[in-house]
Length: 381
Image (tube, rainbow, N blue to C red):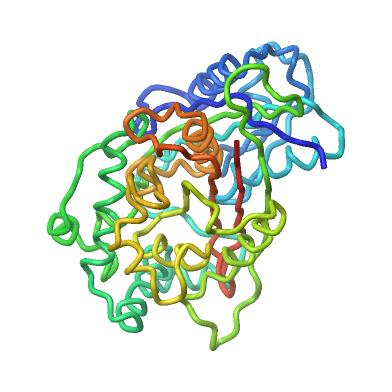
């Protein structure tokens, strides 16, 4: 199997970028990633642009003035998993020996939406009906949270502790939108969004950002070579009436395939960046990714294992809760964070001795399935 290396990466700070258009924001990340990889426009053979709400042919619009000379530009939309899916597709093309050097970037400007929850799929009458009845994503995760508290004998403070951890990590990350720490009491006292989830337990919906990586089949001559060990994208399976809402089946399935592809297991992970759009999600994904046995997610969190300095730090970037979640950029930004971590370039949030990392990103709300898509990648040095 052909080796694929992440040879450079960059991201913009996540937050409000008033007066900055999407092309300019994306170009900042693109040019910095290329400089980090030591490549020029003439070296890039194909470009993958991940975006959800930016409109048609956004990739071509963004790179039009950067001198790439008419190479293929692929626009990728797969909801919140768009960035991860773009990396997955680029890897496949490189393994098929179509390309040796590829640029992948993600971009989103959620501030242009004016606030509120992220809109669900609008060309499906069942999903529209669910949304009109209040079944938006915060409500879905609130139901999972309520069930989790009931079945696992957990408390609202256990959910809040995820936000406390990730905001602590985010305070160390100059790219994070939220850089203020919070206590459990402050998290629980913040405005209720969907019981039991309060404001500080939901990722910000007013955020812009871009991230980019350069993938190559040639091992870099300098620095620690970060290898893309496995890449998996799966779709949701139609749910039955008796499905367990605490079983993140789509993510567990993707993780099993990714571990098998890399010939590794959860015990080999040193650092994880996962899709903590809501606090309850991180706890469910501990179990789906095999970091904790079923029913032991809270114990893992309380042990300190997932904090910086712990056995397997989760979301040292601050995660979606603190760093922010500009949809198309998120999966690529997770890759950038892991590249920095594995190369020892993460500064105050560095996970010491990290050699293997995992990224996990889910996306899409459709009536009748867990999620529309889920992606898991393993990277290593």
